[in-house]
Length: 267
Image (cartoon, rainbow, N blue to C red):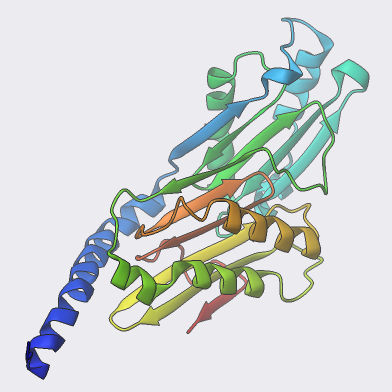
């Protein structure tokens, strides 16, 4: 069957224009979404047990919750531990790469009571918000990759195979991971924001690791999660994988300010 060039071009433009329309809708909502600090997920560490009211563990817990320094919010992360033996507790606060100062403090202020509401009297657990994660544990795992506490959230809307193969989000994430860990960074957590324009569509991404991850462990964590959760973001117009040790995200709308991150790459 013969098809004129003009008709074939119009047919090819239809799926692209559809995604552009979706993208514009997301952009309109992006500013309001980015201003909020949405609860995402939590996990209580049942195996670590519960503490009793008035116990030394509860006293240690209250102390480290209240003694977090202003400098921690300024740099966007904190690690505090207290006690010994059955009363040992460690707390990690990790704010997103573009969330520092008042935003980090606000996220911590929201995450803390919500964690104890969802995990009442549990000695350990983790809660994720859009702009931070808060972690409590009886086990000192600083510097080690956490393979147990990871999850994926994907956009309900899908793109067809043509557009998905055209955008290649999996390869975009591969490049993002490589760029995040390409250079040693002893002063701050590994963090990169990137955007790439393909035809009339722009894909935006972010990858980061927790402050205690080395260059090698950061890359290892991101690569593992990229492979492990690949089915979660297949054919999706946006998705994020979050964990204690590393996270990444891609969308078809800008969700982080270019001025916010130390590494912002365009292609």
